[in-house]
Image 1 (cartoon, one colour):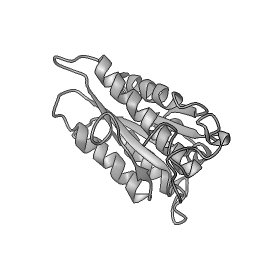
Image 2: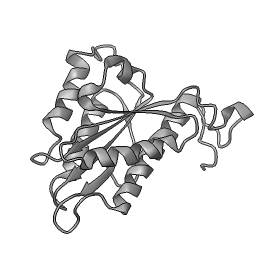
Image 3: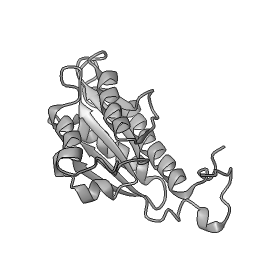
Image 4: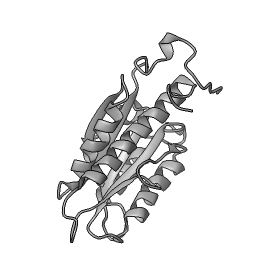
Length: 193
């Protein structure tokens, strides 16, 4: 794929995304991860022409997964790892959705976000386990807002999701949509070096 610095024609504008579809999916009991998911969704929607589907991991169908150019998965931290519901979602990719052996998610963009009660509660490990599942499916993983994705600390001195954490989640959604746009169009995103 050749990537140019600028759009080659008016059709290469962000408005002409040829139906860019981003799936934002998550598990949340407390509502914190759901709140982060809404900010991720808004960030992805900031790229004109991007349609974003927001669903819990248990609601996602095979058609919705395979119809997406990008998938952003969010999980609370449970015992320094993704929740069982998020792990079951990835298990469904193979055992219910039949992603393998055709590698149906190959070259789709993937990213992760998480919420955890304490500063060092395992948020980075949780994001890495989500990203590892995506890499195992030959996806292209990206981040913004943090080294591995976006995260929020939700207990102690920082109850709930603060504005900086919402901004990181928004930036993650935007970055994923930009990269998916570039892959789909085969050129650099307008205005980017």
